[in-house]
Each structure stands twice: as C-alpha cells, then as structure tokens.
Amino acid sequence: MLIRKATAEDIPALLDLLRQVGQIHFQGRPDLFRPAPQKYDAPALKALLEMPDRPIFVAQEGGAILGYGFCACKVTKNDPVLSDRNTLYIDDLCVDAAHRRQGVGKALLAHIRAYARQEGFDDITLNVWAFNDSARAFYAAQGFRPQRLFMEDTGC
Image 1 (cartoon, rainbow, N blue to C red):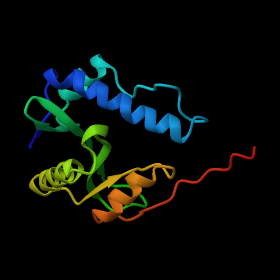
Image 2: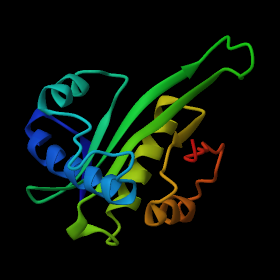
Image 3: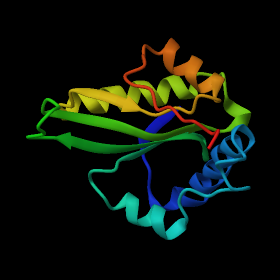
Image 4: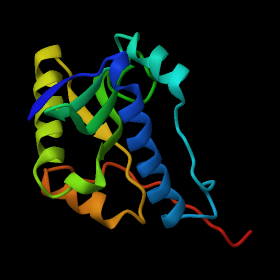
C-alpha cells in the first residue's frame, strides 16, 4: 500500500469516499445531516488540492484508492487565552467500506503523524461525532484522547 498526496486524478475516488462518510453521518444523526450529503464537490476538491496548508493524503493499492486523510494547518498565535500552537487538524479521514479493519486507517494515520513531525507541528487534532462509536474506538486505540467536549440541548 502506498500513502501519497492526492492529485486531481483522485477526485472521482475522493467523491465516492466522501459520499460514504456523508451516509454514515446521515444515518447517525438524520436530524443534523441531509440525506446523501456531500462535504465537497469536484471544484472544491480541485481548489483544496492546490492549497499548501490543506494537504490531502490517499492510501492506494494498485489503481484503487482505499482511503483518504484531509488535513488542515491551524496556527494559534498571540491568542489572549490559548498558547501559541501549530496544529495539524485532521478534517476528515475515511477508509472505503470494503477495506476497513485491514490496516488502511492505521497506515494513513501513521503517514499523517510522520508528516506532522517532519513539518514541525506541535500536535494533531480532530473532531469525531459522538454517535460514531467505531471511529471513536479507532482513534482511542491509536492514542487519541478527548481534548474538549461539544455538547447540545435538543429540548428547545
């Protein structure tokens, strides 16, 4: 398996994986997510691929894209409350349903960690939805721990 930066040729596969993630979100919280939501379309992906502070990595085997990791560089500087930090934020990580539990997610995460070390980031952060038990378990098994909780009251 090869982990590399995504290219414009990967856009159709990225769109397919984004649909899979969208479906998981809709199934988990149909009150929040639209049916068949699409986080990015092809033009938005093309623009993201050209942004140096938004690296996208793909896991490829043969000609197939097995998964992706969308990242964003976030800098906190001169904040009145927070310490200065250079954070690599994982905006989205997805492994194709047919290839889950085969080490693809671990390989993507290992690559993202190596990239973060190479580029001098202080930490890696991500958000995970509370309903997504499998993602929460995966990230916990990879050493991630809660930093903060985002809470809601739906009784309004």
